[in-house]
Image 1 (tube, helix red, strand yellow):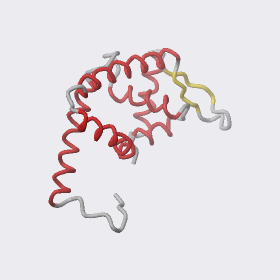
Image 2: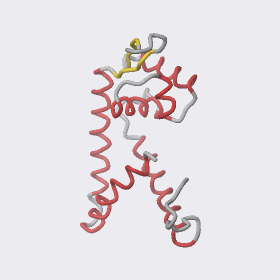
Image 3: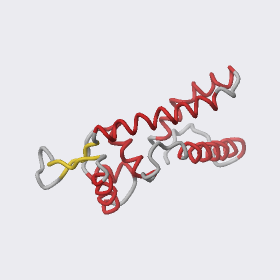
Amino acid sequence: MSYAKDMPDLTHGDDAAAVNSLRSAVMRLSRRLKHQRVDESLSPTEISVLGTLARCGTATPGELARKEHVQPPSMTRIVALLESKGLVRLEPHPEDRRQKVVTQTEQAEAMLEESRRKRNAWLAGLAEGLDEDEWAKLRAAAPVLEKLAHL
């Protein structure tokens, strides 16, 4: 990981404790959010691939593998499973006929929207337990957490 030259060493002292606390909290929230799924037949990886397609649009299986940090053969299997469930379509690549592009279907879009609604409602319910100052801090931290998630 690369830090700015004036960035402190985050592996010692209070910074290390903050990193540890952040990791632990993010992992606990992630596990709890995963239980708020709409479709229990989809794995977290399959849902993640659908989310990537929703954010980034169509992609080749190779591009999806890179974005999801999995090996291309694994992505080929995931895409085949999603296609068999009617959640994605494989179409010819517009510029390279040797490749295919993966596009999510309307069924996937509807399922993702329902999943987002369910998870957002659950998370909003938790946030109601925060006081005004805590909520303001969390709201301000959201863009930073989003950036961290995509580094």
